[in-house]
Image (cartoon, rainbow, N blue to C red):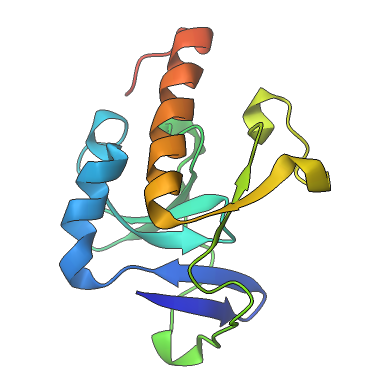
Length: 137
């Protein structure tokens, strides 16, 4: 895994050997079949790859095809500048923005590790489907 600043974005890029496992652990196939999670951008969005190698972003919550966007920049691993303040940490909104949580309120921000992030992403995406009545597409 490589973490750090890539221009103005903080990226976490997973090692190729971990992509399949992490895609399964996050449960991406239930929401976006045919894609793989390759990392995080700005902590709020996944960077995902389609079968043709195209790169996209999608919010961690909700993982929904409606919010799928082509990645707005190309990733150059050589340009990533590590920042020890954030190493091994992922920013998480205690109450996700889609549920009315503030992205700027300090009491709504928690720093979690990867296993916690996986757990929260799965739980909140399931909750989103329950309350919105949306079925994964």
